[in-house]
Image (cartoon, rainbow, N blue to C red; front, side, top):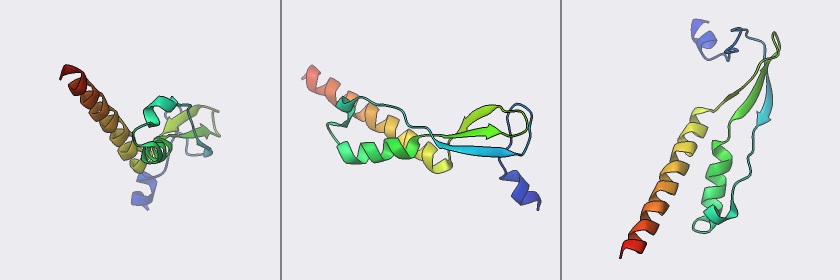
Length: 93
């Protein structure tokens, strides 16, 4: 029972346990970042988006990423860093 409660989502404002999910948040992204690896980057971007939640007790809205979304988000930033590094190396030579 205690282990189940540790995984239960709570409101960061009032610490209430009555949380409603409003689904994932999708942001627009520039099409230029998809030129190298269009489909994998689009999939990773979509997987990294957070979920929107609302506390039924106080009405506070907040965002959380799942562990898989956190990994996808990190992968997205690492990929962007590699592409920027690759472009910088091409300019230097």
